[in-house]
Length: 385
Image 1 (cartoon, helix red, strand yellow):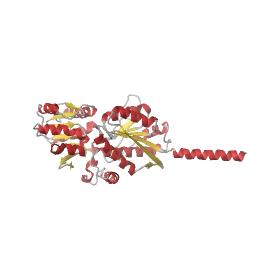
Image 2 (image 1 turned 90 degrees about the vertical axis):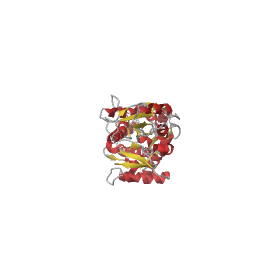
Image 3 (image 1 turned 135 degrees about the vertical axis):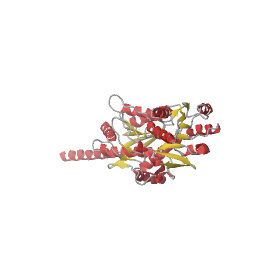
Image 4 (image 1 turned 30 degrees about the vertical axis):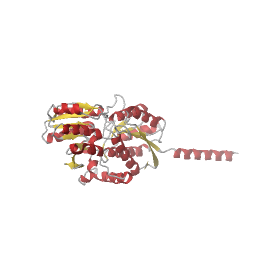
């Protein structure tokens, strides 16, 4: 009887261990915009994530399960998706999303429920007074994106620039970045015109920008909608140069902007022009690998910067997960804490966009090495040393 009982307990223990091993997978929740006005960008984040998962789908001997949801470009839906992934799908980390408002919404949920969040869209993040945020941002800071391109304006002798951008948090971030550079002797901003992401015309705003007689125009929109100001200003006779941010780096912007977009200069992550970079550039090796995998899984070339943010977000997660597994099991609060701690401890991680160095004092981990300037020439982005 004792032998039978011992055997039964041993068997149960074995089954329990097997079950625990089977459930030990690391679960990642990924949210992007596959529909709505942010879809032209959201689909690129999705393609980048497909390349990332193909690059590595396990870490430390643990399989990674990727769960993807569409937020429809709606911050309310992004909030619901984040809660569903954490409370129902029991994910260990969140990655997302395609628009700044929705990304901010996801960050709030992650911070509330204490699950690490890796933001792949540019957002303005302020650490709380007590403790630290449960997340970091992969992209270059909006202020840095704007600084690099405004510095290029000054380098080209431009003394003032008009501004037209989105009437949301992204538009605010670009405008604030440009205004902040005025004190450094960079171009004076002569206008602050805004339009909604769903608008189909910007005639009134374009006329107001032109009324200030700017030498150049800074575009604070993104993707397809970023072409609207350029088209309207050219239609109204504006002949000056256009400048922008990485938010304009996609095929839809080039297609819709057409001749009006030709010659626009934007700040960009080096991954956009990997082949044009010198061999000793930090992004050359991993960027080349990314492009190879991207082409294999998506059947085309990565001509944007957004897909690279997803890929770098995955690299950050992988580096942190490898360390966190030494301290706790996936699916537990202890693992979430260990994972967040490991993310903040990342030092000199080379990605396709930047060399990442995080800390609890800042949700951002990049510097000016993460940006280059590119110019649209004959429909292609060309590196500008």
